[in-house]
Amino acid sequence: MLKVILLILAILLVYWLFWGQRKKNSTDGSADKSAPASPEKMVICAHCQLHVPESECVTAEGRHYCCDEHARLGQS
Image (cartoon, rainbow, N blue to C red; front, side, top):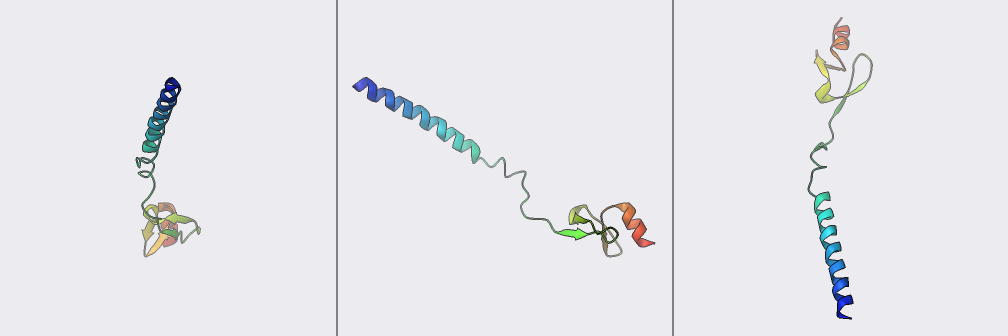
């Protein structure tokens, strides 16, 4: 009877150690590093109406464009 109890305790200990390691790995924050801290503002290209993140847009004469060519075409 004592052997059965010790065997069950050993199995529970191994399970607890394994579960604790998995939980630690899933909450270490490595997945959060790739996610942006906050949503980025989107702007509309004044030439083709494409929505572009503000950090990737080209700004000319107070207007936002999706690329240099559209900024050039918008100025003429």
